[in-house]
Length: 120
Image 1: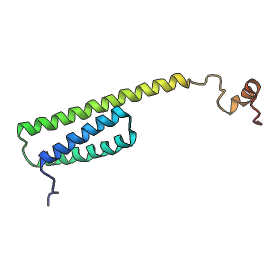
Image 2 (image 1 turned 180 degrees about the vertical axis):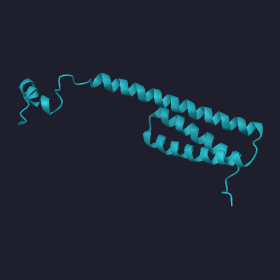
Image 3 (image 1 turned 45 degrees about the vertical axis):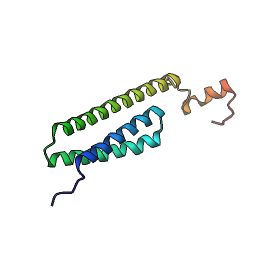
Image 4 (image 1 turned 135 degrees about the vertical axis):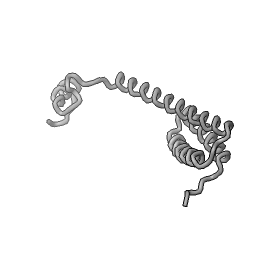
């Protein structure tokens, strides 16, 4: 027995709405909303693709599904660029520690230079 899936047009409507919500969450930097909507996109996309495999798609529905896939790819790319940018900013703010000042080996140096009274 084949698993039942919802008709494709309503699934595409939900998928497009969820992708729009992902875009809003990205713009607002709302991580909770982003995570929730990204899960919905994954679920809906899997259902839509499953439904598309079970029946031939008319060209307008095929085009909408392709556009949803392209929008998802663009959002992934934007998130990847934002993550890379954040990583670069963190590297600038917290550079590598060539002198070993931040580990246990640097404790004596920190005590002498900053008045740190932590016992070794």
